[in-house]
Amino acid sequence: MRLFTPGPVAVPGEVLQLLAEPPLPHHSAQFRQLVFAIQSRLRELLEAAEPVLLLTCSGTGALEAVALALCPEGSRALALVNGRFSARCAEILRRLRVQVQRLEAPWGESISPEALERYLESHPAVESVWIVHSETSTGVLQPLREIVGVVRRYCPDAFVCVDAITSFAVHPCPMSWGIDAVVVSSQKALMLPPGLAIVGLSARAWEHILRHTSRSLYFDLRLARERALEGLTLWTPAVSLVRALGYVLEHYFADGLAPHWERHARNARAVRAALGHLGLGCFGQSSSNALSVVELPEPLRTLPEELAARGFAVGRGQELLADRVMRIGHMGALSVGDILEFLAVLEELVRGHGGKVELGSAVAAAAAVFSS
Image (tube, rainbow, N blue to C red):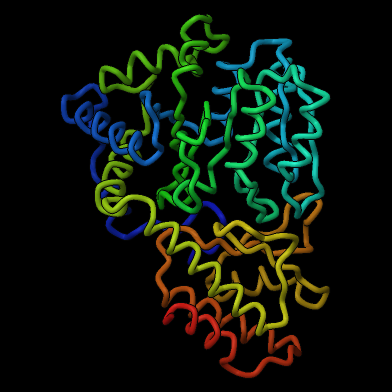
């Protein structure tokens, strides 16, 4: 089964081999050296001025860890909600007894800086703002830099917290834009299996965390920072994933993030060019290069199952979009050949449903993008 899901993603073969090796003892000198090297590289890639934390959990766990650390009970938070995962951020805050407000946009649309400006003009007492940069349920990318600028103008002391789980290495999202907390997960553009999360925090965020006692033992970020400064992690880490992360950073990110931004943009253009020749459109703005969320007319709503029968896994729609869309991921160890083969099978299936598609036209459209 080849993964064209928006997470987990296809993992490079040599990384899978590395994951099969015996695990490193997590208190060994070798592991500490590895952790120090990873922290240094991640700080460069995130443009983070402070230590970066490795947590053994999903991205959702890391978001909850940040919320526990930066949002005391009763504090006022604003969540920008335009899909399933941004709604999950709001739910994390609600369960932690934070006074969470929601600025919403319809699924398929981003939240404009102008809408945020209007909101903050009348609600200036916000203490944290939560943004899902790339909303994986809809394929929408938030205008992050502009949003951060609005928050800084109207609420300069508010913490800006960003879920960059499907945007890191796909779109620029450096902490130097004024971000206080950023969360990244292993199973997206980092090309690893799930289970590892990365948290970057600003100096002002750390000042807050170091002044307060954690409400969590497992997610005590103050203690995690102490361990990080020693080349260790909090609790027993996913040692094999940490080693694989070190390998990926060294071998796939040696030239920084720009080649990955370009690759994901090219993958997105190629897939969408092919979809146009198949008579298929993307849902809403579909502005993220991490995935294409494809509108499925009634006769084609079995495409995900038919693709699976041919060895290709795609994502189904979620909640409001259940059965209405399929989500094609552009991340992971996908070669040009992988994508063209996937599109050839998709073209064949659409033709089999009576689609008036010229044989080979969709694949040719994608190939033209790659060759250019």
